[in-house]
Image 1: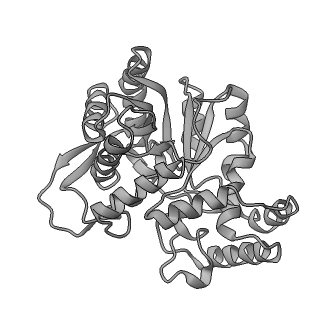
Image 2 (image 1 turned 60 degrees about the vertical axis):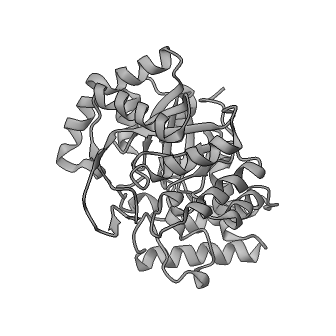
Length: 334
């Protein structure tokens, strides 16, 4: 078996942490409730999402829906939350989030503290998967080597101890850049890699070498950001403010997304369905976790995963969507 056992479709929770736009507590609860009703049993979250807000909302909802703790939950370490008096409406892409500021720390004490604080917000005795969040040069620049060394010197050992003690089921990393994955796979044992936005219809660079290596080593791959932050989620004409990798997409990306959409339409397939199903075709991929907000998006995701997609579509999409994919700039948020 490759990696931990998780359902093929999970739910990403950055959206209910107010990514891009505020979400009410009621809508957040309704989103998780609809996911539970639809049979989704895997939820990925992080302290960074709304600075505790996503974990808190997920924990509140699952406390009512899942009192026996049957859901599979993954969360992340690498950022501690420090109280802030900032009155800014938007910080780090999250709108009207909780009053904390994320502070990077990949050391042993920070990992253990972050894990404990996540458990409190989640109202759970344990999480199933613990991921080191956003290591790598594109996030940290000149500080990348320092953070990586701190993680390798003490943070990783703390994660191993938690796993060995049975406090968590699996350990890994949650990133959206490929190179740091190779660096860590050469140095430490990982059960899983959550790679966001790097194995999609628009950007397949993880499929070139990382996914085959993970399969060879028995490391499960969870694909986050299958819609590349939204540009692949809906028809281009219906998006008033499209996002690609958390930013406004450049014209070449808009053009490539439109070309993919036309090919899907010619085969009678919704672009969003092809985007969600594409990662699951690779044998190293154990789950795909679109970010979901609102019951309608949950139902849509479930329908898309079950959609009938003709095999002939995939080579056509590959020819259109792959050209130049590995030359696209990587972003720094996962």
